[in-house]
Amino acid sequence: MTGGQIKTTQHGRQLDLLHTPVGLRDCVGREMAQKQTILGTIGEKMRLYGYEQLETPTIEFFDVFSNEIGTKPSRELYKFFDKEGNTLALRPDFTPSVARVASRYFRGETAPLRFCYRGSAFSNHASDLQGKLRETTQIGAELMNEPSVYADAEMIALLIQSLLAAGLSEFQVSIGNVEYFRGLCREAGLAEEDESELRDAISGRNYFAAEDLLKSRGYDKKIRDSFLLFADFLRGEEELGRLLETAQSVRTREALQRLIGLDRVLRDYGVSEYVNYDLSLLSKYHYYTGVIFKAYTYGTGEPVAAGGRYDRLLSFFGMDAPAVGTMIAVDPLMEALRRQKIEVPVPESPQTVLYTPGDEKSCHEALMRAAALRAAGTAAVMMPAQPTAAQDSEREEGVCRN
Image (cartoon, rainbow, N blue to C red; front, side):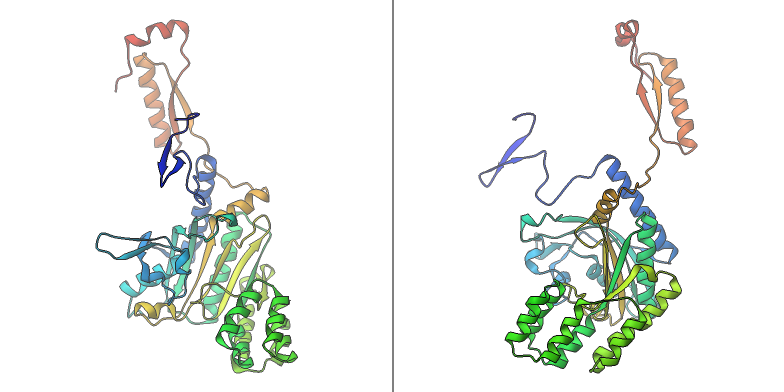
């Protein structure tokens, strides 16, 4: 033991047992109370929208998150084996788990299904230098068996109202449609490897790299310009409509029409001020099939929420149903609230009830007082009073008895 720290060794390295592994952290005290407040506030908003809470295992079979399904790359999963030799994984993403649950227990159901969840997700990032947490707290909602634009709008409105309820006021939800990008790729005749490379450049807003790629592959200026329009943010139906007038393929036109319809419903929800449209918005999760969105605010370097439509994901689990969902990343949200100096309310501190050690009457009265406070809904803790010199000499002669 050195300097009060407990040491051990593993694979020839000395470990400090008082610390967590890289990318993991403890949450205690006021911070934990604030996290519980945020989870409770957002959870109540989801309940008011009719979402039923469910819980999925932290550990799933590896195939639930396989590359075929389109979640995180295998190298970013925490993988291990059970005693039967099955490959297991810590969940990196709740959506495939919720899709599995829906397919197992609600197959054949045709009415809309609304579920919400909360818990930890795990990602084994390739680099320790990214500064990202490997365990994050997430809360989210999934709406299944509902293919309409009204479902997309409900999910985005729920997200916006959840962020507002948590205390955030300055944020924007950027909305895109992955079908627009795919339509342009088909229209331009891009090879699969070019599409993948272009996706990475555009989603990273590296438009110079995107243009260089298209030039090097010999695509003409008209095609290059159609992709570079991604650099522009669009504010609503009017600007989307102007782009629709120039769209060439059925796929791109349908993608823009979906966004126009979505914008109209979001205006009815009264949340348009928090929305813009970004056609460069793409996702590393390849199971998204249409409208996608991310919420951004200042004070954090990553989105505080994300989501979108995934109409083919459930089919991997045997249930052919459309779906849309959203996930709020609680840790970045809390960081943003802290940096924006937005106070998250926490329960009042417990009332302290003092008793005198060794004084049976004092102990009894303190117990009764603490019990009365708790019965009235007030937290209470019993604490020994600082003894006087006379009391100190008598402490060994008596104890509190129930």
